[in-house]
View (tube, rainbow, N blue to C red):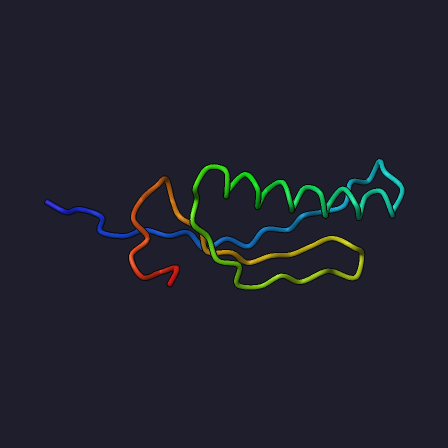
Length: 79
């Protein structure tokens, strides 16, 4: 029998600009979406660590994040 002792996800997420908005509004929408994403993880008690945050030339945002998976123990992954 096997049991998972610790689990963690590493994700690369691209917050892209919305094409139907003017550029400045689309950039602001990306910033708001990113802030909402972080707040939702905090509200849900999801442990995470931001590994990389790269603003792109077009105003979009690329992040790499390690985050807790389904309330599973993270072990030393996020230390």
